[in-house]
Length: 356
Image (cartoon, rainbow, N blue to C red; front, top):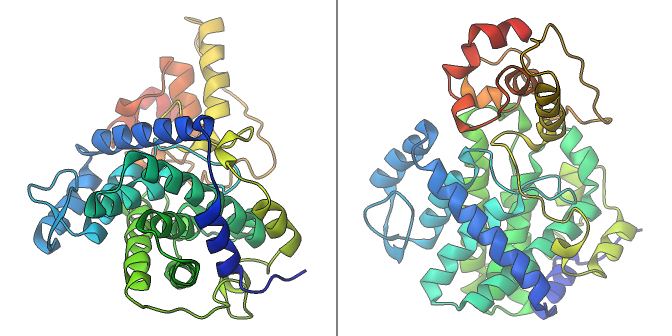
């Protein structure tokens, strides 16, 4: 089954859906959590790399980017805050999109909202519209196969979410919103091969920045092909196995995806979400056998449950966030999995290396 003009369909839904207080309450929590993660990311070495770049390159503007002394443009603010939102890998997770929706949505919306003096209610409704857009794009794309091929869905799908959300926040009409979404189709990118490096948080930074650019360009007359998402050379064909029209239609018929079971998950530990169940089990084991010592451990996961865990002998703290063995060893030996466990020094602790 194919769907014509997917961008228009997404735009119509994003601009027209109404949301109630239960969904808005979760959007508030997601926004607060994301800002907290952004602030927590400021002292990180990778954040300083972004700051150094931004201090030299940031244009003048009226929008706040954390860590910069002066306000800047919406696009640059979205870039900086997007990087901060993901640098700790402590940001929330959506199973439906196999990624981190708020890390892209919140920086983009804060930038556009501050630039246009939008209200809090407008920002929350835009967030929810963007979240629903992510769910629909992920469904139409076949996100599981997309992720298996090595794409980082947080950025490839997040850019659509933020473009739809930003279009709603700015009050664009359906035609211009569809153009913004079409631009997002060309801006999407991000390889999972770069997990465990500075580039991973830059995926989010560029997705938030690109969404802001798409919205602002569409608002002033910028155009995209009407079939940029579902066409033979469009997003679904290039980055996935082809469009799943039935799944796309079914997702378009739902709203307030944050309210669905597993719709939005807040992390317990500052590392890849695919380590969390194993970390829970290891911490429970630590409590049950405190003081006995650990000689070895075997971890079983669901199919594809280790897809994002591409390191097995991490050399840096960032790589440790994507090493299931490291997270489990830390939990079993220390009874914790915290921020201090993901430094370059921490991953080389002798007892943990032995258990790896």
